[in-house]
Length: 255
Image (cartoon, rainbow, N blue to C red; front, side):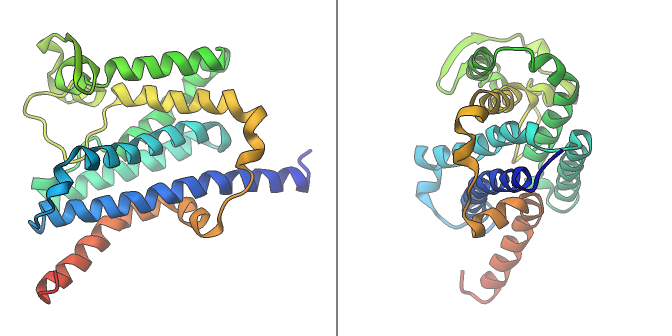
């Protein structure tokens, strides 16, 4: 039987993780605001094309995906949660295809995270039998080795190790998996490979640390926790709100 103390501890653990998510949400909103300024409103932000800006962008998506894997074991009704996130990703795709086709989002980060959550439902029965340390190691290794799969190689960032057969890079199913066909375009593309391996890394990281370091996750900062608890709705709304604000400022000649 779950006691009130147990319940409070679970709430505190969620608040700590939500606080981390809240920090990343703020970072994401700022990054996307800069993206809108550069690519929609044609403002010159030279630094936005720098390696530093790329690292900023990667830090956001890496943390979101890793944290999603870390939190997978904490929630209930994984199929329902996975479907909600996946459908939210489909909605983003449909809206951008209809209203902003030049900036369309196909197979974006929500579609990825929803897919990962659903895949974990059958896989978790097998994965929970694995040693968490080895699971984390091999998940990270597979992520590193397949990081460049979208561009036709096994390798990581500037390191291209093996060229993959071009025959793999055809059709939307293969594009969803990670083998992006040549004419494919999306402003937010997160394929199942390599990113599922980063999600798995988060899952095994939770298994590895939950006993020893759980106490450090028991407290969060309330304002950030509130943001983190509403991360999906904030993600869905932040771009329309930013775009609307910048459009108004642009018309008032204040941008």
